[in-house]
Structure formats: structure tokens, C-alpha cells
Amino acid sequence: MSSTFQIDFSAAHKPVIVGIDLGTTNSLVAFMDLTGPKVIPGPEGERLVPSIVSVRQDGEVVAGNPARQLLIEQPDRTVYSVKRLMGKGVSDIGEELRLFPFRIAEGSESVVRLQLGDRTFTPPEISAHVLRQLKQNAEAYLGRPVTQAVITVPAYFNDAQRQATKDAGRIAGLEVLRLVNEPTAASLAYGLDKRKDGVIAVYDLGGGTFDISILRLHEGIFEVLATNGDTHLGGDDIDNRLIQIALEDIQSEWGEDIGKNREAVQLLRRAVIQAKEELSFVPVTKIELEYQGKAYRRELTRDLFEKLIADIVERTLGPCRDCLRDAGLSPEQIDEVVLVGGSTRIPLVQKAVETLFKARPHTELNPDEVVALGAAVQAGILAGDVQDKLLLDVTPLSLGIETMGGVVSKLIHRNSTIPASATEIFTTGVDGQRNVLIHVVQGERELAKDCRSLARFDLKDIEPMPAGMARIEVRFLIDANGILNVSARDLRTGKEQSVDVKPSYGLTDEQVEAMILESYEKAEEDIRERQAREARVEADTIMNALEKAKQNDAWLELTDEERRTIDEALNRLLMVYHSDDHLLIRQSIEHLNNVTMKLAENMMNSAVSNALKGTKL
Ligand code: ADP
Ligand code: MG
Image (cartoon, rainbow, N blue to C red; front, side, top):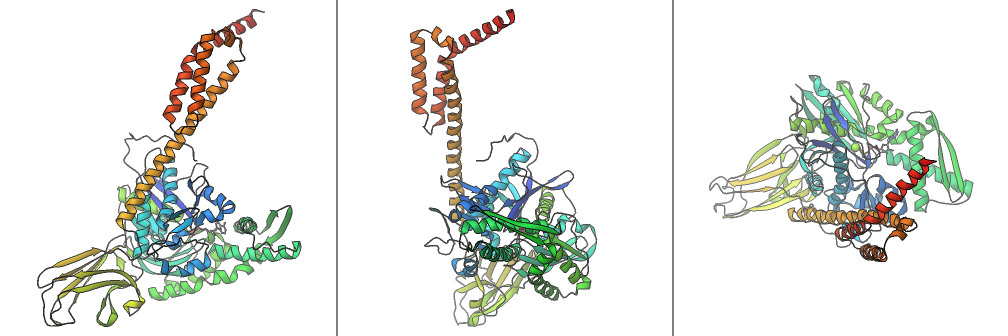
């Protein structure tokens, strides 16, 4: 349980909008102060909150560092990397299930549910626990309530993944004012908008994902030209490689394969991560593991480390070249390179990037903080604290509708800058047709069945006409968050039908509402439990004091009647001590306090007279 803190709800400040990097591995919250964007530390001064959630045996849900601890103790009640499941349906997650120990609850249908102990959670609910921890950290630090946020998402996130991220915010009690693409946020953090024109490459190698984005800056406006990457490439691959080597060593030294022992592997994971992170700053370090009385120790030089991971670093370069090609640019045309993600601290990674783009990358800011800092800058822009900045982002996948024969007609092409809109006229395929089905799809393939189905709706009661005569206008509109609205209109009758696209794999408004309610209910329960515990602590204090007082002469100076009253009051407190009603406990404490008043006075007197005796010599 985190410590309690005071929130000044009467603060005359205008509400603060925070910027949040909701990462696969780590999450952070930042805000704009008078001097610029600042990362907000947690209660122990920690800047990164691991994106890990765990359900303790007593049912309390914890996020961040306490949850990371539980990853070793209770792996089947703990979940990480849940960003990979955001906005996905059960049929989309085969690849993730192969690579990650996600436990999908039975009966999961369009929305995935994860099993943690005896409870189940959707990915947005899990993320909401991480967000709630960040919100709490921010409130404790700023001393006022925080209810509005800008949250970053990978540039390639589709509609469903963006919606799921917004849902997570709402469940956590945060109004998500804007979703910003991570590379755009990173460029903002570096203030690259200060230069007039240029092309920026943002290379983001985090824990489990690699993203490369190319942005164009024109007249202080950012435009994402192209994005690429690998959703299963990052620091985790490096960790796994080192673990593999250590396991082989241990096998030959101890004659024992500890690879099947989850606890041992988790401990080893920590050890290799520590060694890896140190090697970014020193030329040689050690991997050390102590387990069940045995010790393993191995020296690792940066030279050897670089050889071991060379192919992993190399794997980032293909997507970079593809991204350059999509943007229609050669490496020489890149003016600035920004490094994002903790793994870009590795000198070999920096070298590889510099060689490819023929430009020295920016490393002045902490690579695991730049996205959150940029989100805070965007929050500042929305709050009106920062002026003269406008952001343009890009839609990662093409959007269109299914037409005759199951063929896709694209309205908005991939990598179009957003907000964006497109309008096209369609017609009917059958004589006298009265209804048209508008099937909205997302993806690059030609046939609708190979694309992702986003929504279907009917435009009803159109005027019956011979095939090919009706004129139906379909309009796509993507807002600044990358979320799509589709409308269809019969131009003859003016009849119109429109939907905010609710992705096929997502939560309904009702489900989100229910989760918010549930979290409030749980919050009340949590508060009640805390108040009862606090009251019990107070009861302990007074009962201990009474115990001591009974050894004092002052106790004997009371009348029998007075002593009986006190014992009765003590029994009353003992009776309610385990009640979960803190008011009941407090009433009994107060009663005991009242009836022991005289005893306390007597003791004071004897203490005073003893003290006076003492000075008399
Ligand atoms: P994400 O964006 O995936 O949430 P981060 O940007 O926080 O993740 O990056 C986390 C990764 O960065 C982890 O694999 C971590 O081990 C790695 N990392 C952090 N610091 C260093 C360092 N000094 N050297 C090498 N890798 C590091
Ligand atoms: Mg990240």
C-alpha cells in the first residue's frame, strides 16, 4: 500500500494536464513546469514505472515496482507487456501467445481477457492500473488532483489499439485529451520544431519493440512521412541471448539445468539486465547469480557483448532502409536523428544508427524519458502554456470500404497525414436496391477478407433505382487522435448514416462504463479497508499505553468503580477491534480515552511530582 498524501482540492491553480508514455516495458508521467517538461518521480524517487500488474493473494492489485517484485514470487498472478494485446481480438494474438506467457481466460470472445489468479482483466483494465499508479504519483508530487492527460501511442497503432488506449485512460479516471504518436513526442521533446525545415529520423529501440519513423518538419509543423519496425525486437532479445549463454555455463559448472526453474531464470534475468545496462557505461562487468547456496560469476567485456548482440542490432537496419524507401529519401537527406528507448544507450546501437543515417544522433535527453517529456510538451500546448506549435501525425494503415466482389476501395492511404478526410461517390450493384452495406476495412491488401474489418453499417431506404444509377457519397474523417468517423449519404434523398468506427475488437461504451464503476467500487472498498487498519493501529497504541499504566501507582489510586469502567471500555474496544467499520473502532477508542482521563492525569501528577522530587536533591 503506498503512503497516503494530501491533495489540496481547493488549489487555485488551473488543472494540470500530464503527459504519459504508456510503454510496453516501462511507463512514465511528466508535466510542464515553468522551465520546461519534467518527469514526475514516484514515492521512492523512481522515474520509470514498470508496466507490470499483479494481483496479490489478498486481492489487492498492484502496479509498477511492487508488481515487478511479484513477477518472481507469483508469476501466474502477474502480467507484463500487455501493450501487445491492446485493441486485439483473440484471433489476432496467436503470435503473442507463442512468445509471451499470457494466460487467456476461457470464454474470451471478441475482447481478450487475461486470467490473474481467480480474476480476469481486459488489456485496457490492466493498462488502467499502470495509469492509475502514474496518476497517483503525479497527484502526490503536484499536490493536486490530476484528471486530464495526453498519452502517447506507437505511430503504427491502428484504430482499435488507439481506442483501447483511450479506454484505459477513462477506466483510470483520466480524460485523454489527445493521443500523440511516440516519434512526434520525441521530436517535440528535443524542440526540433525550433529549426525551420528538415527531415528527422526517430529510432526507438525499447524493451520488446523496435520502431523507426521519419518525420518532415516544415515551417515548424511536423509531418510523419513513414513508419516501420519490428514488434518483436528489443532489449528482451539481448537479455534472452545473455541468459542462454549463462544457462549453458551454469549447466557445465553446476551440472544442473536450471532453465526450467522459473524463479532461477527470473533471478538470472535480473542479473544479465544489470550487466547489460552497466556495459553501456563501462568496458567490463560481471554477471552474478546466487541460487540455493550456489554461485555463478562470469566476466563480460563490452567487446564480447557487442559480438554477441551484433545480429540483433543488425536486424533494426532493414526496417530503417524500408522506411527510408517508403519516405522516398536517401540517408543523406536525413538532417536529424533522435534516439528513443532504453536500448539506444548501448554504444553499438548508437554507432550502427550513425553509420546508417550518416548523422550523429541526439542523445542529450534520457532515451527512456524523451517520449514522456514530449507528451508533456503537447499537454502544455493543449493547456495554452506553450504556443506556436502544431502537430501533424500520420495514419499507419490504409482505410477503405468493401465494394462489389469483395474488393477494397481505399479512401485514405497509409501514411496520410492526419487529421485527414476523403470523400468518394459509390453506386448500387443491383436493380432496385434499397439498402447498401458499408463495410469499413483497414489494411494494405486488395481483398476485404484479407484486411482488418473495422465496422459494418447499413445505409437504409435509399431510393430504388436501376443498378449503377444511385449516387452514394461515402466520407471518411480521421481526427487528430487517429480515430475514424465514416458517413454515407444518398445524394438523391439526402438520407445519411454515420458511425464513429467502433473497431470489431474493442470494448463497448457500456463495458468501459462498467469497468469504471467497478474500479470506483473497489476504490471504496480499498479506502474502507485502509481506514479500518488505521483505526486498529490507533487502538493498539492506546491499549499498549493502558497496559503500561496498569503497572503504575496511579492505577491503584483509582476507585474499584473507576477501574471497572476502564476495563469495560477496554473490552468494548477489543470486541470491535476486528470489525471493518472504522467508525465503530474509533468510537470505542474515544470512549476508552474518556474513561482513562483521570488515570492519565494521576500519572501526569505522579510524573510531575516525581520530577519535582528529583530536583529537590
Ligand atoms: P519500452 O519503450 O519498451 O517501454 P524502454 O524505452 O523503457 O521500453 O526500454 C527498456 C529497455 O531498455 C529494457 O530492455 C532495458 O533493459 C533497456 N535499457 C535501459 N537502460 C539501458 C542501458 N543503460 N543499456 C542498455 N539497455 C538499457
Ligand atoms: Mg517506449
